[in-house]
Length: 179
Image 1 (cartoon, helix red, strand yellow):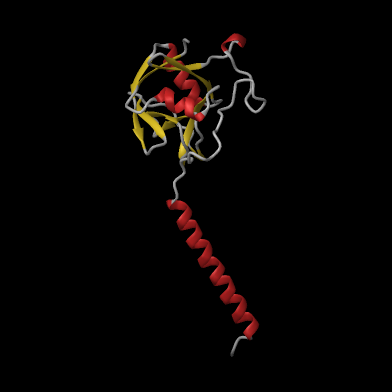
Image 2 (spheres, one colour; image 1 turned 180 degrees about the horizontal axis):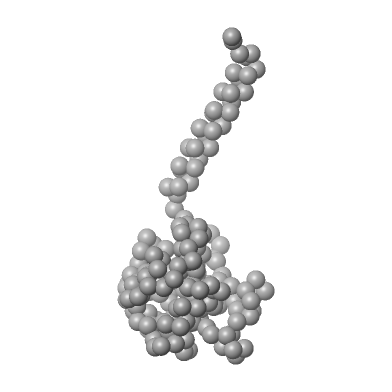
């Protein structure tokens, strides 16, 4: 039995569209996710941003601080068991993490212990503080997509300010609940 020409034409068009979609997806996968110099600067959300709930040391909530040289980053914690466990760890004392650059979009370092993970498939943004594999902490200054657990978000810095604070080398970051 032969198929009508109309059916064969529709099938050919559909197959071409699917092949074009596959090519586009493969091309996008290899594209750099780092912003170019001409792209708009990302501003990290301020604690007063309506999209971010008010959570400051003044109203009794615990903030996380990352001390890098003479800079202190203020981190608004996520509302999950991983961030709560990280805060509990920091209440016992400051945590010093030797971090290194990875992939041109994050600084990463070993925690020296494991925390409970709440991994979900997410795309990070500059300023995201992420628990990776349960025992590493990362501060993103670019974007990445993977299964991660959010610990918090750096407040009140633009992406270039965050990059400057993290530096070009391998910073030592002291995480604390004390400013």
